[in-house]
Amino acid sequence: MKKPFRWISDRFSQHIQTRLTGYFLLILLPLVVVSLFAIEKSRDILYEQAVERTETALSSAMNHFDLALQNVEEISTLIAGDPSINELLNKNSTQLSPQSIVDFSEVLEQLSKLVSVNRFVSQIAVYHHASNMLISTNSGGRKLTGEPQQEWMVEAARNNGTGFSYVMAVYPVVGGHTFGSMTNTDSISLIRAMDLYNSERQSNLLMVSFQKAKLLNIIKTLLPSVNSRISLVNEKGEVIVETGSTLEDEVTGRDLVVTTASDYSSWQLTLVQPRSELYKETDQLRLFTYAIIALSILLAIIISWVVYSGIAAPVLKLSRGMKRLSSGELNVNVDTKRRDEFGFLIQSFNKMAAVQKHLIEDHYEQQLRLETTELKFLQSQINPHFLYNTLDSIYWMAKNYDADEISEMVMNLSKFFRLSLNKGRQVFTIEESVIHLHYYVRIQQIRFLDSFTVAYRISEDSRRVPILKLLLQPLVENAILHGMEGRSEGGSLIISSWIEQGSIVKISVEDNGPGIAEERLIYIREELAKMGARSVQALSQDEEHVKDLFGLRNVLSRMKLYYGRDADIDVNSEPGKGTVVTLSIPLDRCRLESPADENV
Image (cartoon, rainbow, N blue to C red; front, side, top):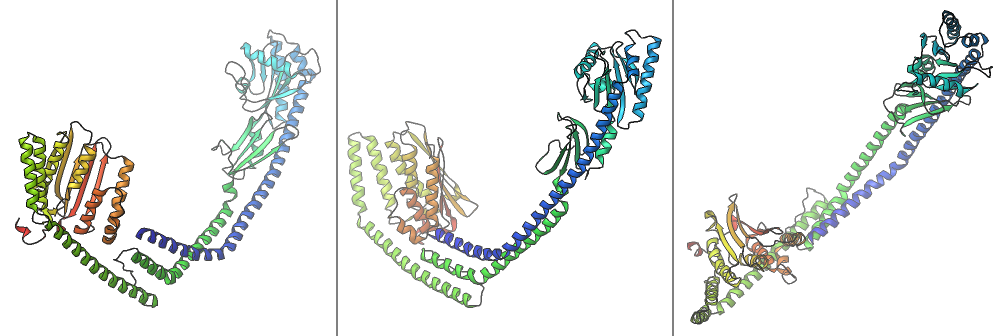
């Protein structure tokens, strides 16, 4: 009962200290709650203000983009409907003549003038369907030789009609080519058909490309930090221009994301900024607050511990000692260095426990001697000669009837009892114990028709070590009954002894039987551990209530009584391979019963 009482006492001690700490923390709780609420509220206000400022800046930039789009669209309308440009394009056929070159140069000159007056336009290009010429303000004139490219230009002019559309530079055209590689542009472009006011127009195509650097200049000034990012996307979600950090491809919940859409073009501006940058100053304030809270909690724990150690701890220690004493543990001593009333009370309890232990041990020793004397007296009432003569008569009668197995069993039994009752001795050397044990083993070998063999591995330094008699017989009996039962042959029994580290005598009984199941082995070890933890008085009382493991309990009880608490039994087993039971006995406790025995 010692462990449950100690566990309850420890739990009670922890409960008192926890309550004291809880009272101090309860005092700090309002301050902590108000501080945390103020920090979170300031973060929310900072977030709302940042969103509001960002939305205003993005709206202003979006208006700028809308003006640029309107300007480019007006220029495209002006070019597409210009009679002089359309006349120069329409009068030229598939054959390039010197006059065609002059006409195309005049077209290029007019387009260059329009580029120079608009800072958002990087180039203006016109595709002449009849000659497959691409007239560009950046690269001059060149002929599109690929039929897929020519067909794409014609199809784009027909699909737009009198309207227009926007094409990204990365838009795939044909044959692995993109619109940007075909027109030599890296930005978005407006495309529409030429000769708007002619229903019988040719499939000539106008392309006005934006200047990417100018678009970036509009949004670069809006970047709040190096880790933020601003993207301009079209109605399809395609990124037109983007600036800022691109380390994180995906937006997470830890980022500030603000988006503004244009009612004119359906384009969107999106700013992404890590919240850690936004909350940088408030995070420092929150860190200071956490440090103050942690320091306050630490002080509360220290104060509660001081109060607990000064008042509650000595009372709990005394209560724990009383419970241990009431559970049967005699070696109870409550440590204390106090010189106050609590110290005097604990010292008085220690003196009372020492006196009680002395009285109990004297009474127990007296009872043990009385029982030993009574046992020896009863043993002396048996006439050994009568037992030997009777067994001798049975032996010769079995010999007369040629019952060799019975005669050998009787002979071994006779020798076994002769040594067991040898002048009342309780201690034999290991060598004598093995000789004695072999008679019993031989009886079992005959019983099991020699289905198992036995081997003795006794080290030279352990042969003369005295041990209690009949200490190994229950272990060997278990090994034979549980390990050899049902075997027709191949059984093996090994009995070994040696001295380990010069201070411990080890004796093992090993078999190659079926072994012990894991659950059963755990149960056996737990039961032996419980016995090893009990006092001598509890061991004697336990014998009336056991239901199994009689042999192991008997051996362990005798070892604890005779050799002290350091004596122990270790059981190891592996299913299918066998079981090993090892006795550990302190060498300094192995002694003969009397000086007369030392001459054996």
